[in-house]
Image 1: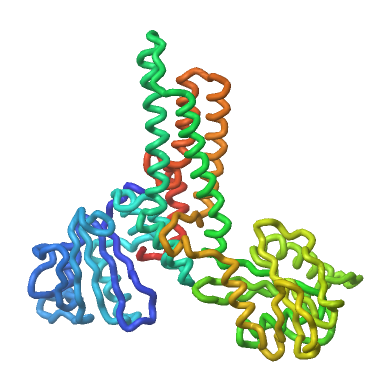
Image 2: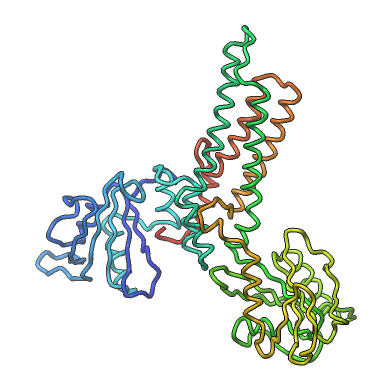
Length: 458
């Protein structure tokens, strides 16, 4: 239940480390810990933001027996409302032994605590107003970040820059509705507080910003999940050899037999702080082999969902240094990199303008390809703290906000009555509020779905 305020406990660190941290949060967190913690000062009497050395003990049932010491620990005290969850909290730092962690958790639950569900600590932080919903989701993204760019993306969102941009839009829209609703109070006097031309100008400005945020999703999602790169070309052009060279290991099977790669092979590589998902695809050619045809169909699907397409051409197939400038099916939001392979076999080949020459077999030209891949993913604005959307739920809300704002502008042009125009604008406000969870009622099932994807202890 979202209203459950039991005292919850959970490990906050991954198993296997030298040190582990166990979190305890709730109204009885301090007194509960005092039942198993022995230090110079009881934690219930300790000042906030203080760290206390002591031991965790397992008190025997018989008073004549001595308590069993489980571990020497450090206990950090946080008091409501100045804690992550907004509740009294304790963080117990102990040795990382799985047995020690399990014993401390057992003692805490026996003393009256309850094991936390995934994301419950962060959900309590959200419900206590410590984080908005977008910031809370960024906590999960920060934990899952596997590259510098993904880390920057989550950090910017968690620190509120993203939420600040949305709140600014909501405030401007609320100001518009306030002016319109003020007109309703003076409807008999036929007073117009909101100049319609100025109103349209403001709404168009807000629409531009909504569209800008919406359009950042392609980049943000690619950075978060890994930028998809499709390696394409004819059979035996060297696609699998290139993937193996980029990986630094023999991952893809290499053979002189055409059609060896019959399925899409995916591998992840971090290049200068950005995670790329390379898709080694089946060679495209006419074939009667049903299995190879299925591989080619998957190749075409990989090309459709790739952000970057590496088109590999064998140096010996270039006539007079000329190739087609375009590749069928490539969209404007995709980057096409033309790679001329096997230059070791054809050293006199004249490279077409913009093409990257290499020998995947020898590793020559690989650094130039890496630089071109990295250049195709703009991250300068991201590293400077600009708002970038990476969450599909946020993107869907922005799409709805765009649609609602377009309807509001149509209503304005049609001279819709003030009360109905105000309602159209309030629809935009509602969709923006769904992203941060502020100014809107977020259903419990949505909250549970969001936080259930977190790990236990966060």
